[in-house]
Amino acid sequence: MQWQIEFLLFIILIVAALVALGIRNLLAAVVTLTIFSFMAALIMISMGALDVGFTEAVVGAGVVGIFNVVAIFKTSRKSCD
Image (tube, rainbow, N blue to C red; front, side):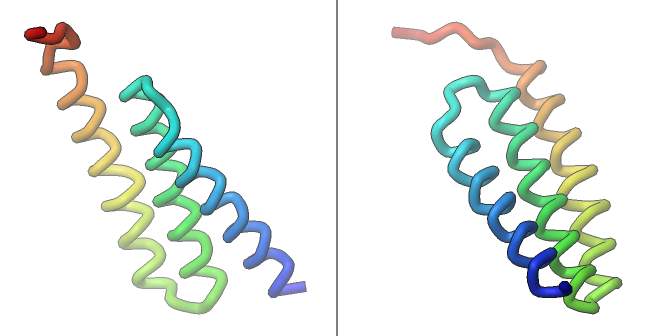
């Protein structure tokens, strides 16, 4: 049963990465990259690396996601062209 859960998390990880690469909305891309990071944390936790998984969840899914959202809202979306 353990490998099925890891396989499902890995599939969600790959789908989130592909969606983040193909999306044109920056805010939606940040959200999908946060999902990607959270799935990576869950895979690490399921494999037994609790400290690495919790660090990835806090830093990768939490702090980096918030910083990216703040950076998107601080910049203008108008092009100079």
